[in-house]
Structures are given as structure tokens and as C-alpha cells.
Image (cartoon, rainbow over all chains, first blue to last red; front, side, top):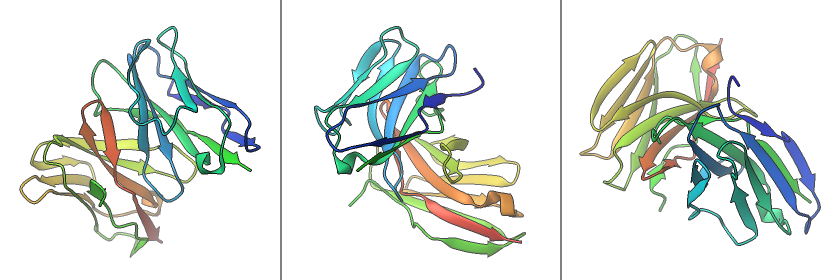
Length: 114
Length: 109
């Protein structure tokens, strides 16, 4: 594909619902990252995959957040029992090889929890 | 105190002006320094990155890093209305990027 794609672009959830956010990285990119961007703030790191291995999940805010990349390409970020403070834009980025400094971002999924 | 500090603006300039955007940081371990541009409701777009101290130029954009002062800058020459966006500085730390809060830039025609 031409770039990183994410779906859905917008998601509204009622408090307590589970949501799943999808990321399709650039074809062939080994590294995949998830970030959370609150309104008026810069993105904050959530987790990192190298192929299918989740090597760093230090940024996940609670055990309600779970990410997977089972075949080393598409990734899903799941949030269980959503809370209002989970409302944010969730950004996915990918990079080729181990170039962590050249991350290409998708358009994000804007999650609103009511 | 955040690891990366960035004035949120907004910064409003007339078309054609030279724009200076800045970030300060506290972690001496940062080695790579990036500037991203983010349009409303879009993902960040990498403009340029530099390694360690020094200058790097790409068209109308110049990135400057001063590690001794823990200070980085992005200069935009001949600014255009299409440059109106949020500019995010970012620094690589291990396998993650640490971002500033972003500066909103408005270029008026």
C-alpha cells in the first residue's frame, strides 16, 4: 500500500464497551508502533512490535489495553471496558528495519467514549 | 516536568516570513531529533531528522541541534499558507519517539 492505513477513522463507544482498532502498516515494514494522542498534546508511546513480537509495551496505560500483531503485518489495538479518559486519537506508525527515527504515521483513529 | 518542552503557540506570521520553532529537552541520552508536521485530523508527517549536534537543510526547512544547550530548532524560510499546521519535535529514545506537545503555526496570506 501507499502508506499506513487505520480503521475505523472514528469510533464512538459507550463507557464500558470494548473496542478494536486496526492498523495496516506499509508493506514490508518490520517495526510497528502505537501511540496515543490526547487533544492538544503530542503523541505518547504505547507499544512496539518487531514482526510479530511485542518487544515493548511499557506505555500501555492499564491492563485494559492489549495489542497484537499475530502474522507480523496487520496489528490490532484492543481496549476493554472503555473509560472516558481513553478518549484520544490512536496513531499507528511503521518503519523499515530498525530505523526507529523514520516512523511513518497513519491518519489515526479518533476514539470518543461517552 | 516533561522530557521535551515545546511552546504550544499559536504562532501567527505573515506569508513570506521566516519562522523559528523550538524545543528544549532534559534527557542527554537523546541522539536523533525529528520534526513532524501534523495537519488537522491527519497523522504526523516526518519533515526531517538530524543526528547529534549540527544543522541540516532541506529546501525551505533547516533543522538545528545544540546538544550542549539541549535545544533544537526548525527554521522555515519563505513561509506559505500551506505551512499552517502543528509542528511536533520528537526525539528517539530506544525504540520509541518522545514528542513535544506541538506548536500551532498559522501563516496568513
